[in-house]
Length: 247
Image 1 (spheres, one colour):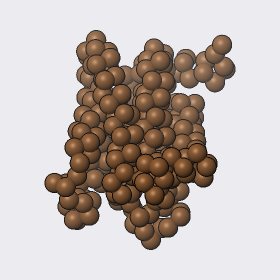
Image 2 (tube, helix red, strand yellow; image 1 turned 180 degrees about the vertical axis):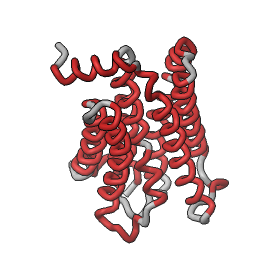
Image 3 (cartoon, helix red, strand yellow; image 1 turned 60 degrees about the vertical axis):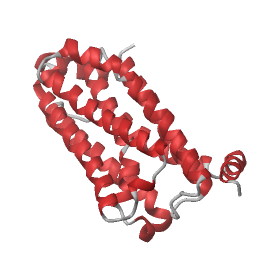
């Protein structure tokens, strides 16, 4: 049953049409993708990682991540140009990429642990929790967005929420994490929430108030960070991380 708030949003959306502000989402998708790419690129260019020495699973993960970002930008551009039929076809084809991001994200965590490549700012259980939970949350959030595809205002915001999850590893390479210590991951969360805040500001401008889907994006980010921190101290997770790392 629709709430009064949902009904109000629906009436305002129907009056102006979702295409009225699609240019905002099309531009923001480009900004978000470029931010993530630049964050990873500058980390490599500064000599913090030797790409040539990375195992194949790392390269495969990077490839599917780039593919997702490309599709994310493309999908928003297709809607902006009114090519909705092609948007839907590309969307269903993108399911393979989403699954690959989730599987390879978990595989990267396992490989890094087994090869003792975990960044020193993380404990082994935290890194295992981080890679598995975030990869799973990304896929689950995309699936939720797809289920909301007939509710455009919800669909596009939750799809952004899924991609906001990918900001965390990018920020880990952009922020001075060693200097931030135990607060690093929470600082990263605050930056992610700033990205959500951009949509919230847009909502207030065009809708008069923040859309519930935007609030849901913030809740997802906060929930994932909290779950990672909680899972990292659970004895089964600590044992699993030690077993994978052989310690």
